[in-house]
Length: 475
Image (cartoon, rainbow, N blue to C red):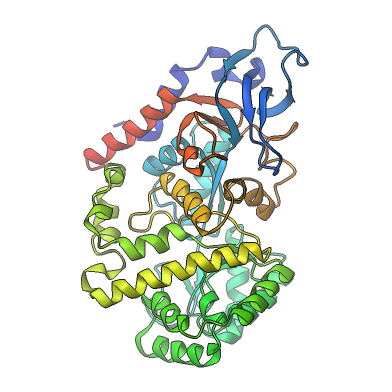
């Protein structure tokens, strides 16, 4: 039986000229009369010619000033808009066969995987690099490091003290992880030991702010990014210390639950202090602490009980084992009361407000969806994330940059990726409408270029259809 990845490779190769199948160096790919949105912050550049050779952008300029090879594959992109390929900076990539096509069909050419088994990810990366699989670039944590309070996620490293924290850093490094993912129940001494050992080992650590550490302390300790706004609302509260002690007591008594973060943030709303918030955000900026707010999953937590939200047509792309194991009672919505739901909505509105406040304060952001939590769809939900960032107060350009230029900057790849400039890797998305006029236009994808390889709309549609067929067969 063919895997979906094998099927997609056949479909992809059969649709390309032979020279393009064998080596991108045999034929230039050229976009003409295209409007380039390079994500540097510059204004859109209309009527441009972009020449791609050997997977890189080699020419970028006005018509008539660039000489094209006779053998070039020329795409007339009149009326279309070219943006850098997108990165989803917070995913859990459980399934290559279904997820890879969904990422690529949505213009997501790279992902930061925050917790998935590392051995298959290493193989997937090798397959993508070799060209035998069409998929995104992957930066991966692999296993995550958590505390001893149940329930720890399966396959996490549970540490109870400083010595175990330091050992966990060495273990994660030896496994070949790209960074260390820290989670919610790390004890204080273990957390700070991890921060110190990560510095010694020249490794990035990122993730949740531990319930036993303040957001301020996490920033000072060098945590590179804070996911899901963990600890932020409590850190903006005039009653921060009181609330943190209450949260710690709940954690020791009941363990960590999915609704713990919403509960603690709800208690922080009434004591929100604008001056304390401003001081915290200034600290984030000074320390270079990034935010990956994953508004998509925070929104899903709020609206998952709504019938319209649950009747999403994109469910046809989600495999049954995922829906049964993780989505059927996602975020415990069946046991939530009307009061719980009202509280969650209030928290979410405040989270949007706080994201806007941090952006205006100069805090750095990367866009992440938290795929594949319930009703967070691989590939698709990154576009929702960009829309939510605009709703929070980002300009469309700033939202776009959070998934392109700033993602590359976060990863230390800005010299070769993240913007459309001469010499950079040709990971691109061709759109039918202007995303700077309406950020939702990032969904209107005409074609995707992955490392210089053109995947046109018909092939993208075949990818989506292949996943839907895979799901319908129960594979």
